[in-house]
Image (cartoon, rainbow, N blue to C red; front, side, top):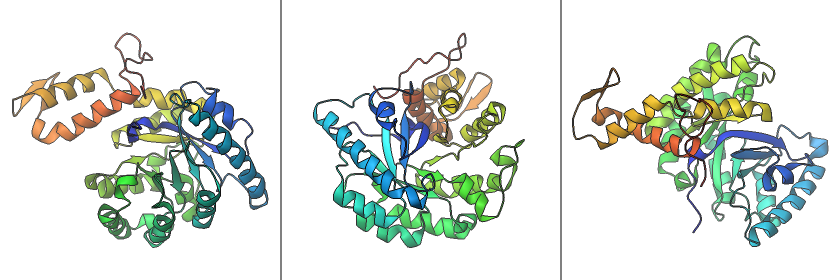
Length: 315
């Protein structure tokens, strides 16, 4: 039986245009050490002119991956998702391609209006879904609440691994781009992320953090990652392999949090003090369970070597 996939397994999700020639090496031969998940993108990362070539390259890759899976390989591969351009492209991929080695689809420009079409295409498959929230209605808390309530009751609910926050598209909606000296939280997206967490998290959905497109500014990335974790986001989109180490480091659990979580979930006391803070299992148990789940896949930092991973992801 296939191991259930946890959203905490995503880590840094690297987006790669389907035109790339080295995707097979990345997936099957560990070209990018430690990569946990990737998205093969057929949408924004591919121009209209290049779509036929991208689809051809993807078809060849999928055939090779499926054959390797049949030969018993793939247990150490990263999670693999495809981001089709639209519903029609998803329909054509499902009809024509061997997708047994793919974990799921990323649903671009996802809205409540497009849910029915997406589900009609994807429901016969076993693919996981990662809808991307990146259209103008994402700024409307009422529309997002309606979407969240619809998804809770929809049969697609159990197939949604996480909801992705599309930062660049959301900034494009309001004609803006992130200032080079600021995190996304310092601008309009700060409100959006907080609102989405407030709307979707209480309903049991996980959210992933937007990309930091400032590839050569690791200081901004690190500041942003601290805020991602503080908002309970389970992973972060990456557009360059050089961002992955910082993402993995940020997602590792602090030793104090790990110890608190263990005590909170095992204590018979209603309230107790630990490491200078009040612990109350009745209100902190969900947090504690998430901490242990994150630690299971992303690791725990040590006090002597902050880069040492104690728990290896995806056993």
